[in-house]
Length: 90
Image 1 (spheres, rainbow, N blue to C red):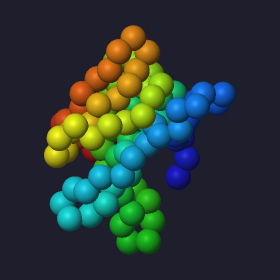
Image 2 (image 1 turned 180 degrees about the vertical axis):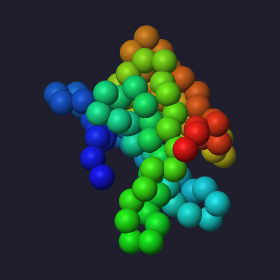
Image 3 (image 1 turned 60 degrees about the vertical axis):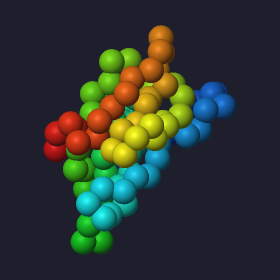
Image 4 (image 1 turned 45 degrees about the horizontal axis):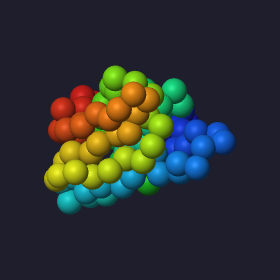
């Protein structure tokens, strides 16, 4: 599976992705190559599959931070954005 970017070349910020639990399973939250969409990735049946996408208001430039169950904050150009993962459609 391709089209991800967990860091910006030349930047010291390397934690643009994270794992989280949903429905008793571990999921990965990873920005797309443009860093303007967070993709929710699951490992099911021996392969990776996308289970959701969250549009961002600006490119992510810093680490994702868990702020509550099912919610993360993305550090972006010009500020941050709080995201409820349950609102990310498949």
